[in-house]
Every structure is written in C-alpha cells, then in structure tokens.
Image 1 (tube, rainbow, N blue to C red):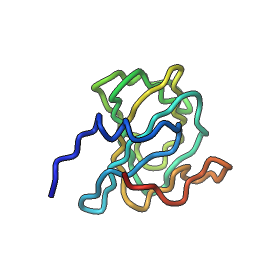
Image 2 (cartoon, rainbow, N blue to C red):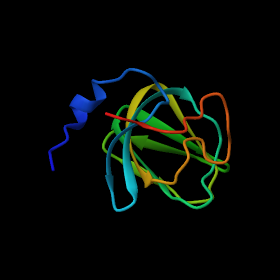
Image 3 (cartoon, rainbow, N blue to C red):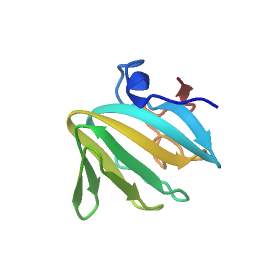
Image 4 (cartoon, rainbow, N blue to C red):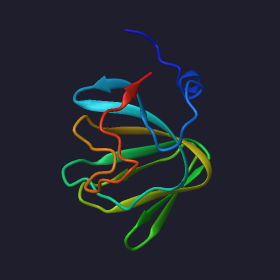
Length: 119
C-alpha cells in the first residue's frame, strides 16, 4: 500500500489520448489521461465510464446534447451511450472504469490502445 500523488503522475507523460493506469480496485481501473482535440464517437455496451476533470474543461458530446465538465467535476457516461470527449485546450482527466473496458469501445481505429501502461 502506498499513497499516489496524482499531480506527480501527470508529470510522467505528455502524450494525448493515451491513458495511463495508476491503480486497480474491485475490478475497476483508475486511469489518467491528457487530452486535446476530438476523440471518436464510441460506446461501451457493458460498462459505465467516469470522467473526472483534474485540469481544464471537457466537453462530452452525446448524440442529443453536449455536457460541459469543469475542473473538480465528474460525469458518468452510462453503458450503451455513445459519447465523444472533446477538449478545445489540453485537459487532464481521471477515469474510473471496469478492467474490461476497451479504450475506444465498439470502434477500432489507429488510436485504439489494447493495453494501458502502468505508471
């Protein structure tokens, strides 16, 4: 058991859209990511996904609306809901999701990551 300093972990990487695993608990993984620009519309049929903004402002595009998530706030995308994260400026996010959750959900692209690097 050890304390994890989230700010220090964010300093260990620079790439966007490449989540890093910082912990696991009860079948869930805790990921950090730096994002900028637009991701792909995708969904996770069997898993909810929590996005918590640590720095910046994240827009979560859904089919019928856009949800704005500010620093210190989180938003849970329910399983089966198509979504596309968009960051006009660089955003730091913390994600909680089941270990089975795939990076780009039901979509496979050149940015899909099969296994998250642990830091």
